[in-house]
Image (tube, one colour):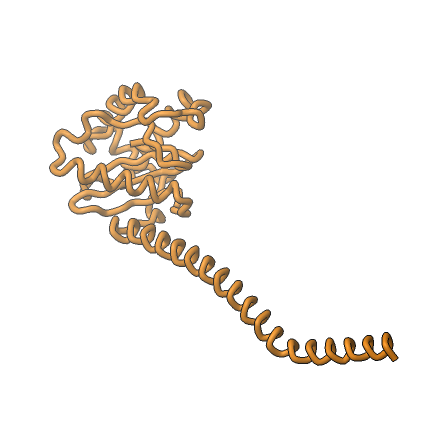
Length: 213
């Protein structure tokens, strides 16, 4: 799946990818949740692997677009990321200047043709082409982080809770500040009111005396 990072909008997808995957809808929901997390501004690494059940998500984020694929855990990580690089390069070439203006989900669904064609090239890891890619020392994936899907999605939930708590505390602090001002005002009135009354009486007596004597 390919999605715009700014709002999590899916813009392209491999249409037949879920036919042989049990609970495919469950994993698609996880992917959408991951995209939603990215749209909230989480600073995920530009390349990351995320374990989920017997599978693993690999993703690349570049140019505010996320390219994600799901593989069996046994599938070579190096090939998975080279597959995503191929998708990224072609997608940027064809749709690079249209990504920001896409207004509906799967606006570039025709890209599925390239996804299917490229996927076939990577499916058999024993072909000479793929063996050569696995042996390419210039393309390394050892530094790419691997995390668990619950951990990644849990981080987003915790951040949401912190954000909500922060907003609530800010609102409450404003209310308390207003109450504190009122209490201070009342305390000042109680403190200086008798003095004001005495001064008023003295001034009145002075005025009456001056007026009539």
